[in-house]
Length: 126
Image (tube, rainbow, N blue to C red):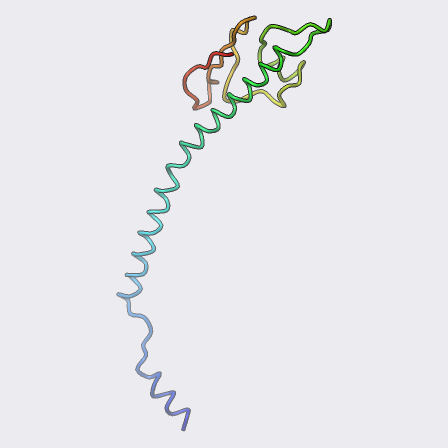
């Protein structure tokens, strides 16, 4: 008897209609589009942050090299290029792929964007 009442109850159920499935698919598509556009704008700000952080790291290394003693114990009192910061002074683990150091002198240096980077502008230190 219980089985007959269950069969009667289930006989009227036909599952989801095609319209209901299409509505759910459209809603999911709209939500996916919103997420894609929201995430798409984050890469630009991440690139700017990366450029800024890398420039600050190089500035700190340049200042450390300027203040570090030479072989005689006197401060270097000069700025240097990327090769010296990485190799001789060991102030950086590796050369920057975003910035290059140009025109290092006793009073200043210039950071210019590397050829393949998306960084903009030049930075003059100190």
